[in-house]
Length: 205
Ligand code: SLL
Image 1 (cartoon, rainbow, N blue to C red):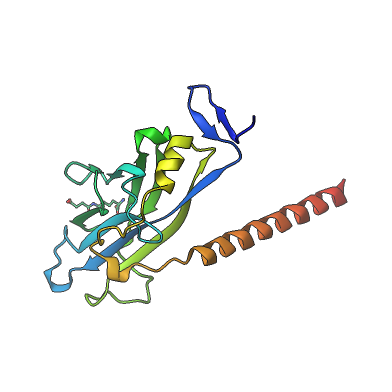
Image 2: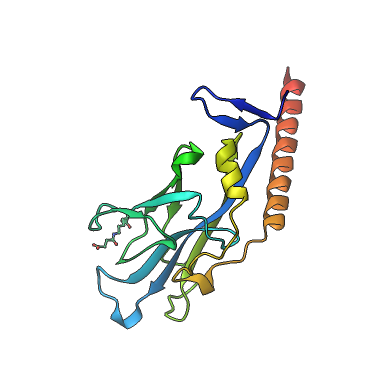
């Protein structure tokens, strides 16, 4: 009888035609040090990864690795427990590679997200020590046809709030519904563009 599962090539039972979506936010939060700033230390900043709804995801995520610029001591920072964040001091903006590793029972491959540390607002906005410069991106991690046992374990775990990030008061609230609507609108705009291009192309043939 078809119970909606199948056995993959490694012998794991998986859920057919099922997607598990984990909405996350990666961000940086940077404080200008003002009078305390020196040439090499102008800012204190934090890079972080969190669930978009601020829930604890330590039952899904085994570790988060933040790859800093090589000018930092030990640039490869591994965080095993939430809050998933690294705080540092420095002078320059750079791309941070953030790698998520999932719990072994998920059988999921690591996922990497590149995020740029932002220290400055646009040219017309002066530096201030009153509030940090934020840069956040919402991402949806998709587990397609997840391992059944992993899916069951996640579904039966009581949700609980994650420990607070050091810049929690400045992070945005993400409404999942709203983000999904935005994604849907982008997709339909892209498909409209594709069909326009196709029509133009057919016109010149
Ligand atoms: C830039 N491409 O030129 C970038 C590099 C590197 C920032 C930025 C290190 C601080 C320390 C630091 O802030 N590096 O020495 O501990 O703008």
